Length: 133
Image (tube, rainbow, N blue to C red; front, side, top):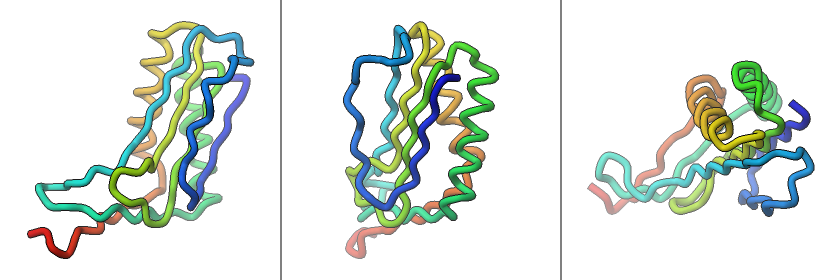
């Protein structure tokens, strides 16, 4: 893998433009995790995410490295995860995977998100709307 960018932030995630690919890839897949307005039929104000930034960044780098090892067509990755309160409708996770071809990019993107959900030391607490039942 040529490039890996990891960001743990309290700020709103700004999706980088689909710049001219410096990695000479034929595909870039973006994934946005957006806080849903409902969970179990209850209105959400948002989700509070908590993490130790250095520990989370270290594990996210391991996850990216593991995915790249099992999907050797991965050339680059950008990953950003918000911590703190994220209101419903806003992005909590952004992942972009660059590969030579689309099939590899789709497979690697899905693997990355699945591993992140399973292994990342980022905890979430839904904040329900006080008027929802």
